[in-house]
Length: 466
Image (cartoon, rainbow, N blue to C red):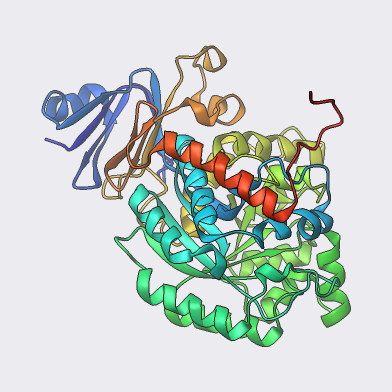
């Protein structure tokens, strides 16, 4: 007998043998996967004998998706910063909006993002950096109650610049280095390891906003605590100019110099790097979070992801935030990741769909240091599983579920979501969050925020609105 029996359909395991099982089944008991195989074989033990049996004969069963770069506080900023490159995008739009947040608005934004991620198949994510004005305690507690897994980074800073631009961080986001560092430790002591679903990481701001001494202090403490650290790096050319001008080092060389490399480090974007820097990432087992939609929208460039994979770098996938991507749908992000590398290299074989699925699952789990627990469908692992309904025109004929997942599927095709052996979305209905209320609250909170900041009050369009 099992708690949950998923019966029929394709099973994409992402296990060490990378098995894809036609007409398969998965059984879950006490939060763990207890059986994976052909339906005809598993039916003998589980069909009609399980607490919950879900007919997945027209669905794909796969590991839950893992989003390695999320801005929870940017959920309300969707459509508020289009048509701008990164630094003006931050200085003139995103930071002033975030610097005007009230705690209740930041919480609504976080709820909206978590709701969207669950509905599009994300079962674990890495939040890149909360600040004090957002009310991180309430946000972390909401994440836990939603049923999803998350590593939550708390921003740490002791300067107010970005690259060679000094004093451009909005005053509403400025925090003292010692205060932000100690508050990260407070959150770590309060929440880290909560039900094996919540972890607290350090989230240093990008070079230009953190001193060398503080970077080293964080990297040493993260290793001492056995927790993670995540930071944007080499997203735009200005990042290279900063580390070269100030320190005579390329961005990855700088990160390595201050201790920000290693298996507990997730560096985000990493667009402007050399072969030598890629070798450092591989040698130190540092993860790169690839965010193709954000990089394309902000005209940041195309990261050398296929090169990194060939050289042994662990590359995972992220969506970034509401104003740089405009959605948090990791299924759609897979397609952009798959398409960008052939465009960059002019090689149709630059990256395979199988590699992109790995980036969204087992490689993401490795980035969060939980690949022994989730990221694949294997007996003994915790049951973080999603099912995708392929009985739709854009997913027919179902002759290659791997290709279809990457090139044709959308987050709205996700039918069921299971985290830690608990169903948190059943037949597209999220069971742990009040979807209707969140959607209503999002409109109200956004209107209040826009009016206070004096930004995004009217749509940015060249068409006439009457």
